[in-house]
Length: 232
Image (cartoon, rainbow, N blue to C red; front, side):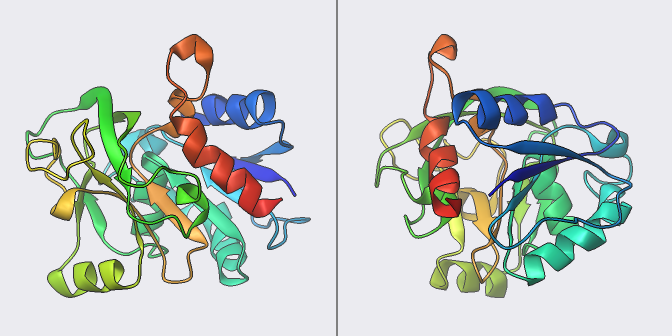
């Protein structure tokens, strides 16, 4: 089992997730350039990660150009075969633009870039990223985005809740889903979703930025350890 981290022009969180997967969680990690057209040696037991950053400078819409990078066709085929795909922040935006995840990420309600610690709560503990997330307890995970407002039509929202596809919701420090905690204006406070099969997952907060004692925050390990243990 191994992780492949895709690097697009403008990716700036690739080294963060590589460091945590390799040095903190002891996993084998390879870097994948966006111009690659295939993923030789990657099977359903392997995970492709689309990291945060500003792919192609976030021109047009965040993720709108990266969605057409050559490697994305290979990522789609990997997902179709049941392989795990995880998108963090810009990676989440790319997955939505590619149609691998439902919904879209719009400009924050305050029209500003937001960089801070946010509280999120897992929607269930059935998927890789939520496997170890404590029920009803808020995790403190950093966010850094200008287009993080999750949106989908009501039919889609109803469907993803019914199917258990909501990974995380923004909440207060007590784990309560409140309007005040919904700093970017996401529909139903949604911070992360999966596809229907649960093998493609995306989230706006950055668990890799909260995974070491030196940072005085290891809440991200609840998320990333679940992913690693699901694959092993």
